[in-house]
Amino acid sequence: MPAIRVEGLVRRFGDIVALDGLSFEIGEGELFGILGPNGAGKTTLINILSTLLRPSAGSADVAGFSVLDRPDDVRKSIGVVFQESSLDTRLTARENLSLHAAVYRVPRAERRQRIADMLAMVELEDRADSLVETFSGGMRRRLELARGFTHRPRVLFLDEPSLGLDAQTRRRIWEHIDQWNREQATTVILTTHYMEEADRLCGRVAILDRGRIAALDSPERLKALVGGDVVTLETSDKSGALAAALRQRPWIKAVRERDGVLDLSTEQGAQRIPAIVSAAQDLGIALASVNLHRPSLEDVFLHFTGRSMREESANDLARRFPMGRAGLQ
Image 1 (cartoon, rainbow, N blue to C red):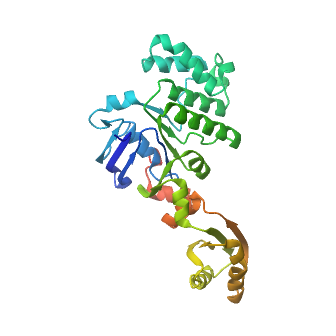
Image 2 (image 1 turned 90 degrees about the horizontal axis):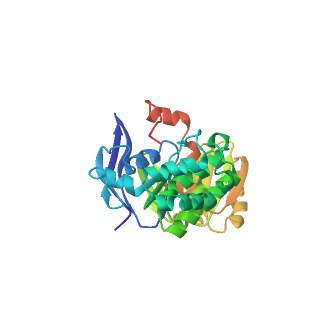
Image 3 (image 1 turned 30 degrees about the horizontal axis):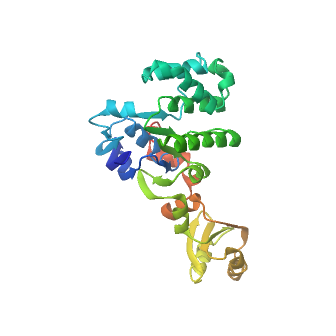
């Protein structure tokens, strides 16, 4: 039995369709990533799966229980770390975990040791009796992870777990998530718009775009779909003419245009750059920059959606969600 089964899931906010017929399954013990820009529907999906929001249509089962028919059983089976902090800053780290353990009815005889283990895992044992209001943002995030782990949920939802953290703290968070998933075989569903986070942690990734799943597979298989190397050209003008010319070359597998930038998929990219530059010169097109890299999840997103993650601007979101972004991320 899968840890999560979603079939035809739809969520509307008035005339806005935030989720548009999602269907997928997540296996027991899987570390599954939901990748997409702000406004893609990631947080809406997590809110439905954690019973905080009812779907407009479709069904979802979590840990074998329907989110519609048996929400209490779902809540007993899951843990959630939200984007926004929900720690009580007037309590100590130990008190926050103790309160959480009591709410989830962790046996009293086990609480002390389990809390100590959780604090040690996230490297906060020396600050166990410090007030949370004295903690840095990274320390609070690690404590929230520890709290999510404390009652040993069957399924753990992490909504943008490293959002806003510096690179070093982000990597420490990744280590804790990976360790817990491996050692406890807990199913972990992680939403993120950090490509490296999804690539580093997740066995499979669903790319969510405007409420739909654009692609779903392992990061390596998704990148293999793009294939070869990616040569990125920034042109001063006439990018359309250059794109048309390059599409005629048999060694160019794909050409994608976006605001004066061309992304070319090709084998042996380094050897092809002189011919690409020559093609631009023949058309009298100046190149502002030429870059070569292996395919990334950013390239996968571009491949399936026709635009980069960064192109989902605040104006785009305001146009799609005129009532505001809350719950639609």
